[in-house]
Amino acid sequence: MTYGLLGTLLLLLPGAASAEGRWVQQRQRQLWVRPGETAELSCHTSHASNSVFWYKEKPDGVLYWIYRSPEFSFTKEKYLGRKKTQWIFSLSISPVQREDSGVYYCSSSDFFPLFGNGTRLIVTNATEPELSILVPVDAEQPPADIPLLCHLRDLPRGWDTVRWQPGGKVTPVTASAVDEHGVLSAWSITWVPAEHWDGAATCTALESGTGRNLSVTIGKGLGEGQCPSWPLALGLPCVSLLFLLQLILLLCRRRLARDGSTPVRR
Image (cartoon, rainbow, N blue to C red; front, side):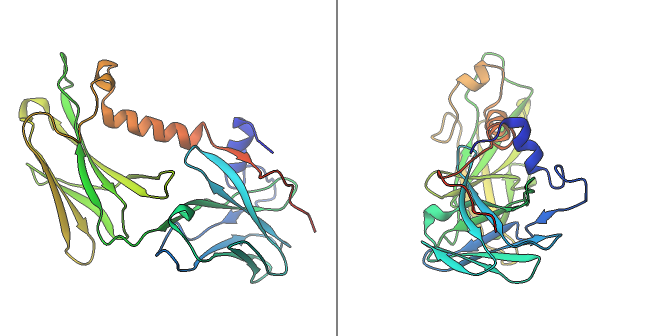
């Protein structure tokens, strides 16, 4: 079953479809586990329920129904659902593999379902991210400020800020996405005045709590991490294009689809 854009947005807004103040909440925003381990997701409802439904968001924004957590536990492939109390449900995934990475949503089983805010599951055994810098190529009319994007691929837990040189500015890792292979990528952006830009930059990823750091540097001239010229030719910086595409995925392409079956109501 597929929902239209308006209906999907209403469903994804907690409480939007309820006049009684009901809600569904997922308190785990992100969960890191290693391949082969067990991941346990949690879902809280404001009202007693016999079951909840679980969906996984694909990289293209589609939500696929994967499991129903019933009143009594049962196993479906690698999934095991439990009803812990009248208001708390869990979903265990074991053993997790890289392709299990993604965002999981819990939904009430009411006639007008309410959705939780989502839990991002990251399956990785990486201890540090792979770094690269994306910069726009030269254009006939370059922007007043040059956007620099530090790309952190296969991001482990704790690497949440970036320090830039020159200047020493520290910026947060503010955007992230899981690709079709289950690899988490994240980005951090800074802007350099065009008159100060000489084509050289360094971004240093910092791991909170440990002091560990990892750096990548680009020199003057074009580098492997640069974006193609067409984003600037359209008057849109490369980094802005990436953010725009991500926004489109989050707000405009999210829809619901089931695997051909309809959940059984109790």
